[in-house]
Image 1 (cartoon, rainbow, N blue to C red):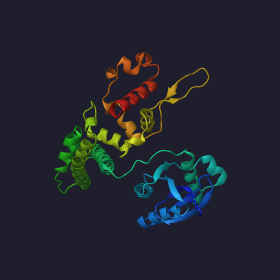
Image 2 (cartoon, rainbow, N blue to C red):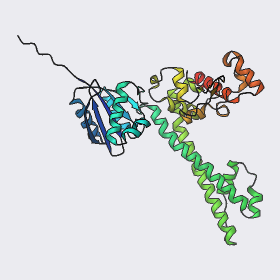
Image 3 (tube, one colour):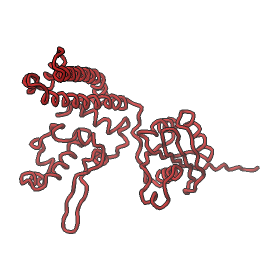
Length: 344
């Protein structure tokens, strides 16, 4: 009797993603290159890519660049196939300087980063309620920015416009200014004055339209945030906007954040060692998700210095706060405390 042993080879894939095409590379268990191929960035292309990788053996791991942008669709497809996906940053700068830069080289680099464990982070995932919140927040952020820009333009026109308009609108609050400008009824007369009034009326109506858009977006965002994290909104100082920013930073699969330290680094709230010689100190982290970091900032978070107890901050930091010797470490500590309090 002859016994046949079938040995299945574990394959690691790497993908360099682009808008129209994805370039994939396959590695064997000891890091040998099995092949490089290009596939269209479509649903049919994703299926062909997985079939191509599977032709070399059992696909165990795939490292994908840009899982939050060009690689989002491919990441969902591979995950749905039951294959582990890790998010890969762009290739090492020293490697690019020594070997050059090309799509096949980037795909191979992504595969090696996944296989070696250098890239081990799970992608956020864009298939749940947090992705819906993120999409709505994109529209809300741009609408809020345009509203602010519109009101600033109106104030500038009022400042340089006719004296009657300046006396009427110069000291108005934003809401009153928008309502007053939108109700203007310019009459033909002086060319400059008439054109200025027309411009101010249109700016006021534009701001009113953006106000309505923001209200409609809030009507959709608030229920989603409440359903996803009701306990987060119950905390002191947390509103729907701040909660939405923190949820977006965590993603649909918060289990990928292994510890409080990982969350603090993601939010840019973890202090970075900056010691040299006899000087031992830390500095603020300039990296991480800047929107999440902004949500942790003191004026937005409403977690004042007085609410941080001695037990939470420690006597050393309170002493520095009293003397004003080191404001940066204080803010680092406060942001780290907020991140643990709100999300942990």
